[in-house]
Image (cartoon, rainbow, N blue to C red; front, side, top):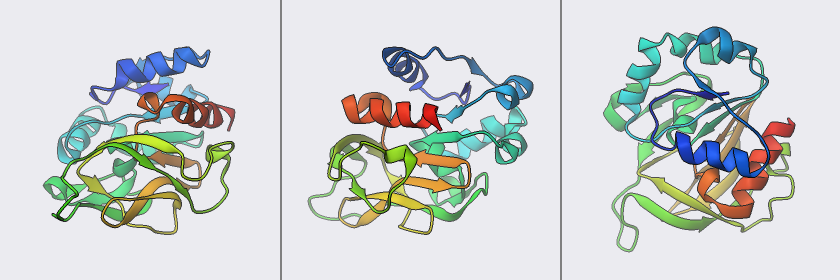
Length: 193
């Protein structure tokens, strides 16, 4: 089940799931989301706006209570954390931490956009078969520092969390739906959880 969060990447995510042989539904209906075997929270845009949409649908209280595997993608991953510096947003509060804007640095324009490598920090079923230093596709201006939930990192001027896991909640800061075979493997791994 893909949460209807207003993200522009929902269609490409559905196509990526179709390519690995999985059909998907998109919904903001709490009953349907709670009944799903797996839930994906996509996100593109600003954290404060995304949280406002989740609150309007009462999904801000539903998502933290889910017990099945949940995968946040890009902004969706950031929303799993406590807060974001972007718009001073209070997020879902599932994972400790706060998304912060990349600092301005020569040679590192913001947003961080394009292909970059993953550094596997510790083994995790989400990353089974994903090689260390595999390339994945990013588009973001805010990121999470390394922390207890970090399972893979990426370096862009400084290291940040590229993949996280906290209980049944997983996150990918990059876009698996745009990350070729590595992204497809991550989605397959998630659906196998």
